Image (cartoon, rainbow, N blue to C red):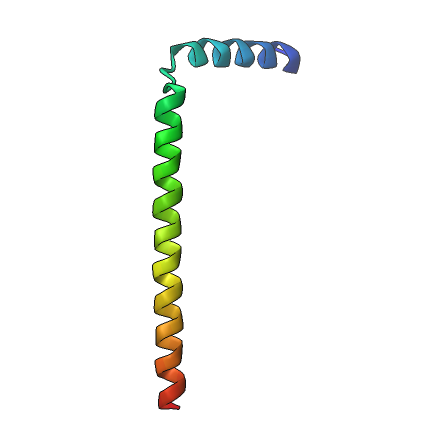
Length: 62
């Protein structure tokens, strides 16, 4: 098989598999994305605060 036949077969299989995927609704996607962003920001704030506090402690010891 040449490269173009392989590519055509591959794209056909991809299209077939994409049709089988159960995509979330817009509402669910927005809710899940919001949760991810909030948790990421909370984690970043916590780690930033810990870094700031520990850096201050280390500087006071030195």
